Amino acid sequence: MTIATSAGNKPWCASCFYAYMKEDNLFVLTTEDDTKHGKEFAENPVVAGSVALETMIAGKIRGIQLQGTVYKPEGDELGKAKIHYLKRFPVAALMDIHLWVIKPAYIKMTDNKLGFGRKLTWTAEQ
Image 1 (cartoon, rainbow, N blue to C red):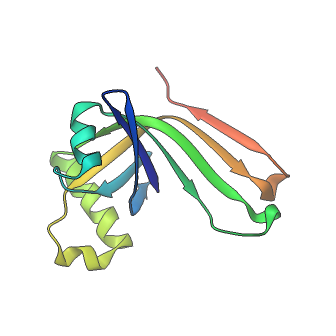
Image 2: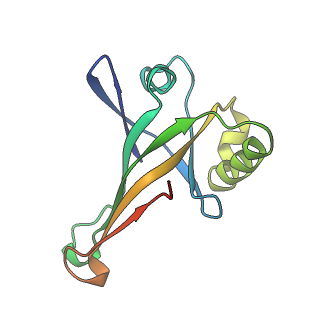
């Protein structure tokens, strides 16, 4: 997943491993507070991101672009986020992980398996 942040009107992108919590529609990632994007999460929690399947075959192109809010989960949500992340990346259990979640407000998906250039969109209820 590529995450885009912005602070002081200067954009930044970071590549992150993520897990998706389907039942809660949340993306879970880990980064320390002192990384550039970690600092910018704290300064401006509005982020954008993308996830893309790597392929050279146009008919198999699939991916999403999203906008949302990033925050540190707490309590039960933190426990669920940790379970999802460690299930996807068990080696992370050996590390001191600092979890964040992205709550998407808008997602656009391109899925060429549904037809070339086919786009689906989702917007959070306000």
